[in-house]
Image (cartoon, rainbow, N blue to C red; front, side, top):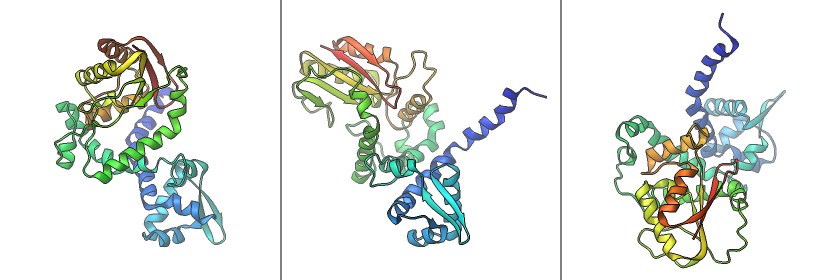
Length: 299
């Protein structure tokens, strides 16, 4: 008979195999408005009532709700009248549209864009390039490093990025003492073609991971030239371990960069090398233990 460790292996493989099923259950419940309805109702509802309000089949909704209970996104109470469902705290905070920390827009972007692109992950690995053209028939890349099928999709992506910032921004901005900088510019837009205004500190939040090394050096050099003496640049990125053994989330983000952009996630040393090549020195790195980390380079 095998060891306990050996017996765990099949379960791990099953969990990994079911990973995309878990994601899609959460995305679907968000898209149909399950969490919003339960928040607005102010009281637990039956599967029949939820299906009627949201215009779905009773059978389909019942199974979706049961799966959400299993994922701890919903709680259920069995009464004489039947099962009644309500949101858990995590759903109220992160999956309802009205919450200040809502991740709804990012859920929708993942469901309707990322999920579809990842069906071509094998091709991305074989070819070493993103899969937007194969997935959506789009071949041109926009200034942000991502591609969009419509302005609506772009707005959803930007809203999603803002929502992520709402849960990790404070940790990143608190990583260093930035009180000495009085002019701060959050870089965005068509930064390769547009001029960059003079400032003391530039924030590049989740920008460099969209681009290859040459494009990163080009952009950082442009920022360096615009930066005032004594100023600097703050990179907000998800850092890989130096041996690239993790964190798992960052490794998965890097795979997503392969599928969707021309960039990748990097180690602190790799970002430091890019900063040094552009002229920045006195580089500091702070791992926040959250989604994103911080790298500060000074001129």
